[in-house]
Length: 62
Image 1: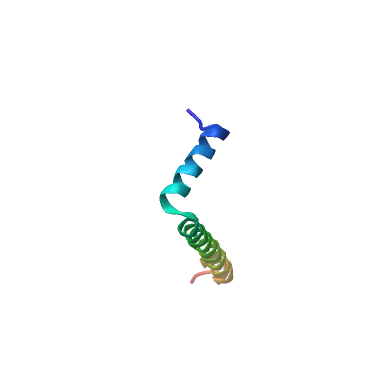
Image 2: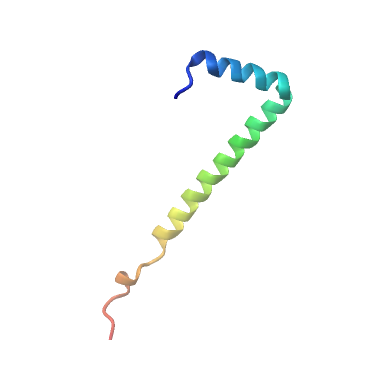
C-alpha cells in the first residue's frame, strides 16, 4: 500500500494544523542539520581510514 499525491497533501495539511508553520519549519531545519552532520562525519571517517596505513603497507614481518 503506497500513498498517492492526495494522501500526502492531506497529511501535510493535518500536520500544519496540528503543529503550526513555525514548529514544522524548525523541525525541518533541525532534521536537515542532523543529516548534514551525519554526512560530514561519514566523510571524515572515510578520509581518516584512507590516511591510516594498513597492515599490508607495513612491509614484511620478521
